[in-house]
Length: 139
Image 1 (cartoon, helix red, strand yellow):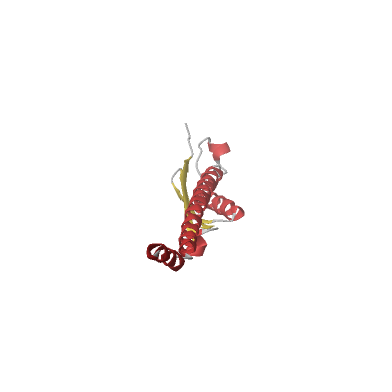
Image 2: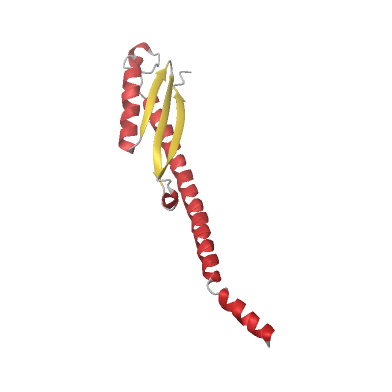
């Protein structure tokens, strides 16, 4: 009889211990789901930044000098190319840098991805980056 009473007393003392485990499991599960969602969101934001950089470089490389028609030689108008690239970046809503070296236009894009779930753990945004070059082919 004593052993039955001891077992029942122990069972009463452990009441609610399942609630703690359930709470911990829920927090870990939300953390994992948040990591997956925000990782895929950052991946898409990186792809978008890369696409913007590619397109800005192409647009800037199309800025050929005005005397190309008269002289027959193609060259990039550096000032116009930088202006075109920066205008493209501004229209896309990102910040970045456009440089022209010879016949090559180089564009670097930086932006931030605002996290959805991971912000609960203190990470409000993650940096994104895109880098592209375009060269004017004259042959």
